[in-house]
Structures are given as C-alpha cells and as structure tokens.
Amino acid sequence: MRVVVFGEGMIEEQADAAVAWGGDVVNTAVYLARQGATPELMTAMGVDAESTRIMAAWAAEGIAVGHVLRDPARTVGRYRITLDDAGQRTFAYDRARSAARAFFDHSEATRTFAWAAGADVLYLTGITLSIFGRDGRERIGALARRVRGRGGQVVFDPNYRPLSWTSAEAAWAAMSALGPAISLAMPSIEDQAALTGAATPEAAAAAWRELGADEVVVKLGSDGAYASSAAASELVAAATPAQIVDTTAAGDAFNAGYIAARLVEGASMREAAERGAALAAEVIGWPGAIAPPPVGLRTVKTEA
Image (cartoon, rainbow, N blue to C red):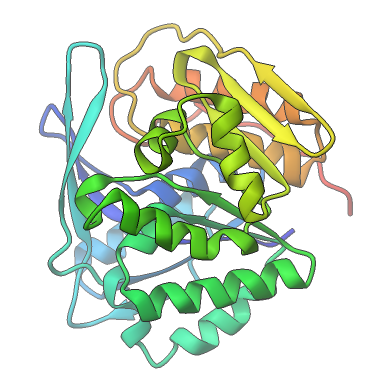
C-alpha cells in the first residue's frame, strides 16, 4: 500500500534546549513506519549538511525519501517548543528559508505530484496548506481530487495554527475548498471550535461530513475520540498515559495509529481509535515530537 505524506519537515528546538527534528506530517510518517507501514514523504529540503543529516534520520526510521526535492538556495525551517506545567505545548516558527515553502518553484514539482496521484493513501494537514499561497493550495486540491477520484483515501488533519493564517475564516475557507476531496477527516475538538465554533464532537463531525468526508475522527484529548461515518458513530475512551511530559505530536501519533489500523489493516473505527489512543499515550511520555524506539513499534500484517 502506497502511503504518501506531503508537508514540511523541520528542526525542533525543545523546551530544554535540546535540538531534534519533527514537523506534523513527518511525525505521523515516523509513527506510521513504526506501525509497519512504509510512508513516502513528499517535501523539499536544502542540500546543506543539516538537511542531509535529517533526511538520513528519516530514512533510518523507515520513511522513503526518494521524492524529497532538494533546493540549493534554501534550508530547513525551525520551530521552538514551549511547555507549561502540565506539558501542554505552544510553538514559535522560523520558516524564512524553508525549502518546503518553495516546493512548487521546483521544475520537478509537477512530475512529483503526478507520481503522488497514484497513492493509495494521501495524508495532508492544515499546516501543509498554510505554507503555500492560493496557487499551491489549488494544486494540492487537484492532487487530492485525483487520488480520491481513482479510489484512494485522502486523509486530512486541520491542525490549525492561528499564527500561520490571516484569520480562522481564511483557514476554514481553504480547508473547505479541499473538503470534497477528503475521505477521512481527523480534527481535534479544539481546532474545530476555533475554525467553526463547533463545540461538540457531533457538530465537529457533521461539519466535515457535510463537506464530503466519508469518515470523521474527532480527537477529544483526555476525553478520547469520536469516530463517525454514515454507518455508525463511536465514542472511544482515551488511553491512560504513564506520565505526561510533553504533548507535542500526540495528535500526529493518534493519526498514525488510526491510519495504520483502519486503512492498512482494515480494522473497525473503534479498534483504530483504540490503537491511536494507545500510541498517543506512549508518545506524550517523552519530550519532543519523536519518542525513541521502541515507542510505537508494531508489525502491521498486510495482504500480499
């Protein structure tokens, strides 16, 4: 199964001044790989030593990097994590020289998108949309429509970051334009409330079902997750973490567990949500986005 993730990889500066790497789609790709899938990352990076080192780390995690474009004029963006006493995080970004933001300036971008159109699963986020202008978002929408039109799954996490948009209304307009191409939406209840005012799981799911999503999973933090489709709705409890150190990438990890179980293995919505919850509970016990192995390691059985 071809799982393509599109977005931005970044350097991560942690609260204790440690330096690592992350980025929402990269985080999900790492945990997908540890679940036994083989995600293929589509992005752009520099040709500098730091970019090369990060790409080698991705490859070592089991992420395919053969369709990462290289930009000699740019490098990799950064984000800094700040934590409160409960381990809840906020981010500050430096994307001034981010190669990913210039993805569509590459001569190879069109060919790479043509390759991505053959994906069985295409994974996108609101952060992916936010780093591009209108033309880039329209090209992403066209790609998503091609994937869904040929029977593939388009998975979207709104992952709303207010500082990356001019307003919540502008963000929701861009996401709504992509909406009809989305088959599985994975919003958090906090993001959906900020975007549309939907304050209940049912209302949040309805917002995406109305746009055209076949299935919606609303992440509720410590209250679990609400999964909804035309056939059924499930409220699934959160897993209990051993400790909460840093909530960075909790949602990204949940998404990976859910996608691996639901779309790769064919599990039920409840089973997939339980897998996602268990993985998120592991990840928040570690600082930063990427917990060290064996966190998240699992062998996914797929049909030949």
